[in-house]
Image (cartoon, rainbow, N blue to C red; front, side):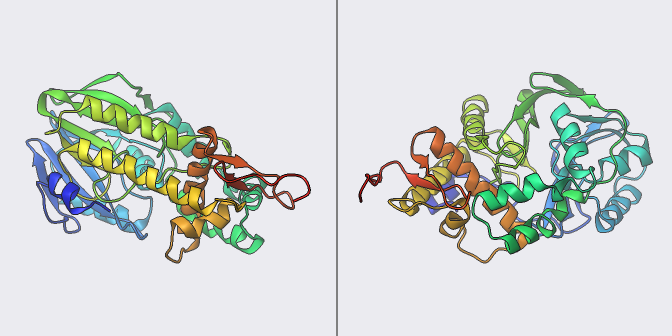
Length: 357
């Protein structure tokens, strides 16, 4: 959480959250809508940028019937009479890409996204049975989750990843440093990692607009996770590098339009807070592992103190693993021999046992 000093420095031009099905103009020619999600984080922001005789759309919401119904009410109501010109998807998580296929097919809209986003969605969300594969179960078991919890996490915990409609067979690839002209505005395409690989963001320097996706949010920390397909990855390092890059690039009075929660200004304040948050988590993990070899599963309760359902546990476990990998790379933790083929880590500051002890 933000302390009172830092909270006062952030500026929220829209103090109250949107009602369902409401559109708000957050900047001339830019509309904001909030769509429901069936999770603890119960909404996603989508944006509409005026684009000639229509609207360019950023992100879609999740692929369920409730979200389709909200879209239909928007298209038949406040958006009626203006077409969708293009659909820009920031990253492969289902709350952002879930209805991309439905919208693209129904309205003949081209999909613009990163190649990683497109292929990740096809590989993870649209590949039947992929998430129940042995590689995922082994990943959890190797790092200390018991068999029963592993079974729940690798099935029910991953269900949300399947909430995606079939993608269109073609897309336009966007990469960092591309330039998009949308309705006369010039947007620079930025790319950030850590939360999602090659996550896209749009920056309009002339109007100080920044569509941040989930890379930086005002009051919650984006999930940064290690996944089974890259078990030794270091996404937290990539994420912290991205935050420092954004701190240096964007003016403080830039209007940040995030994927969740409220638009805000003074991005540098929030970047500093997020960096400190992860440093504090690393300190908590180092303390938990001081002189005591622990698995990733052992560490989860030291970081996430509330009860976790399978969906939340899959995120919590993988985020703790991201911190462990980051700390191992920095020499703050070392891998132990483990027990029964289960990996453990221990604080590098702790004295190692010598032979005979």
